[in-house]
Amino acid sequence: MKEITPYNKLETALTELDNGGRFYNILTKADDGNITTAELSKAAGAASMFTDKQKMIIYLEMSLLDLEHANKEKIISSLSDDLLSSYKKYQPKYFKPSDNIDQSEISSSAIITGIPKLIESKSEFTGFIMIPIMAGSVTTFSMIPIIELYNIYELQDLETGKDIIIAHTKGDGKLPEIPLKCGGVIKELKKDKSSKQPATIFLEGLYFVGV
Image 1 (cartoon, rainbow, N blue to C red):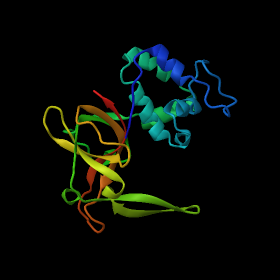
Image 2: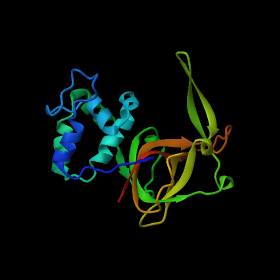
Image 3: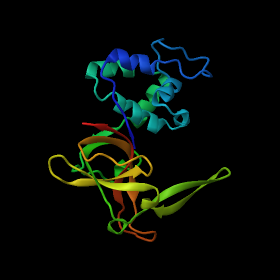
């Protein structure tokens, strides 16, 4: 997960988001009142994000967390038609770790507030996730242990102490054990490759913001 510093002023948000895109986005103009996918990708700092609309919308939602509702709505109303369509499709839901997040939420965007506690020992946590593998134009899936790709945290509810598992990409540094809003995608975790038991729900974390 990458840390985000949300915008605290409408003017700053408009300047940063309505930025004209990169030099090769010749049809995109800065400060024209229309925020495009290319401009949001530039603001997020990742050219590769252009094709990952869900990740882009999670970034946008979290970057607007500190704005008043009316100012946030002004930003949303400035989105281009295609970006607004993506926003409506991928806008994150807000949860606490104590909420009953069920299978119907798998693959949806979420922002969950809590305090992360690292699971230090690999022996304390096992589970497998599905990873897509491209072979030409064919996509297949392989199950691998989640701890091969992620550091695993329990995100604890600020009030009840209940928790939900969050996966934090290795190499991104250790998360601070303070209240955070963590944004990402709800996914499922299998106990083992042949298990027929219901999968565990977890959050594949992408971004975080201090509360």
